[in-house]
Length: 387
Image (cartoon, rainbow, N blue to C red; front, side, top):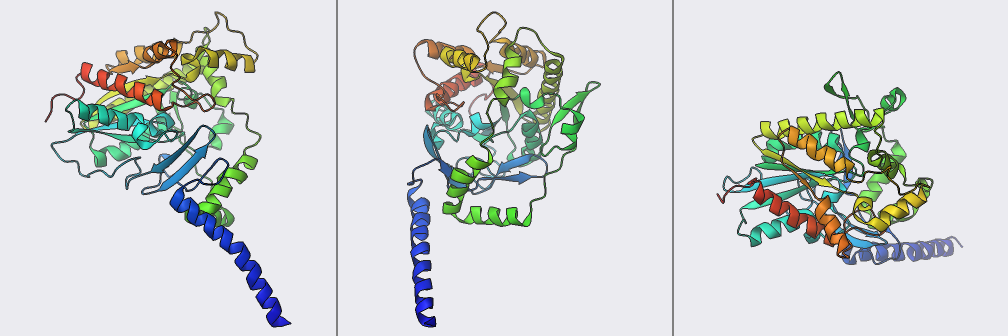
C-alpha cells in the first residue's frame, strides 16, 4: 500500500514537473512561444542613488500586443554590445540619456534610435563615433542627472545628449505635497529659493516572501512569465493609465498654473545641473525634445480629448512645451533639437511613427529621430572631425 502511494505520488509529480520543465526550456531557447503578454526575465533592479537601473548582463523577451522584442544589457547595464572601459583615446563616445524612448524596448535592438544613429554615422565615415544607450524606463531628469554624476567618470563621454520627453519629464518634477515627500520611494527634486534640492527618499524594505519571489523570478523564465502575464495584471488592474496624460494636458493649456510654473523651474534647474555635470566630465552637452504621440498624430489627440471629456478648441497650445524647452536650452547655451516639426511632417505624409496603443515610437519613429539627431550633431559640429 505504501509503495503504491509513493509510486502514484511520483507519477503525479512527474506529470506536473515535466510540462513545466518543457515550458521553461522553450521560453529560454525559443523565446515567448506561449500566447499572452509577459516577460521572460528580470532586467531591472533598485539602486540606492538613481532609484532603479538595468541589471548588468540581463536578458529577457518582452511580449506585448503590438510588439515582441529581445532585450540584452552589457556589463554596465547599457542596452547593446559590450564597451571598452576605459575608452580608447581614438574613439569619440556619445552617451545618450533618456527614458523608455531611448531604451526602446518596443523595438529590436538594431532599430533603436541609438543603434540607428551608430549605423548612420558609420555609413557617413564616422565609425570612430559610438553612441551608448543609457536610457531606462521610467527615468526622469532627476534619475538621468544622478546617473550621469555616477557614470561619467567611468564612461568618460565626449558628448552627452539628453532626450527630454514632453509626456512626463515635466510632470515628474511636478510639486508634491509634504505627505507625498515623506513617503517617497524614488528620487525627486525641487527648487527652493532658487536652489536645486533633492528630497530624502527610502526604498521600501522587501519582505522575506518578496525576496524569495524575486529570486525565483530571476532564475525561472516560466515563473517570470506567470508573474508579469498574470499576477501583475491583477495587481495593477485598478490603474487607469491617465496620470501622465493628465499632467501633460496641463502643460498644453494656454493658461499656466502655479504648480506648472514650479515644475518648469525645477526642470530648468535640472537642465543646468546636468549640463554642468557633463562639462565637468570634459564632455559637451545637448538636448533633444521628444514630442508625445498626441502632439504628432492628430487623430490620437482627438481621441485623448474625447476620452477625457475635453473639447479641441483654442485653450490648447500643442507646441507650448517645445517652445519653452527650446527657449530654456538656448538661454543656457545648450544646443537643442526639437523633433516635433519633422515628426509632424512625416504624419502629414501618412507615416505612423508611434504605436496605436503603446505611447512609444515604432521602428519608423526611431529611424526618423536618428536621422534628425545625426543631422543635428553635424550641423552643430558636436562630434567634430575624425580623430
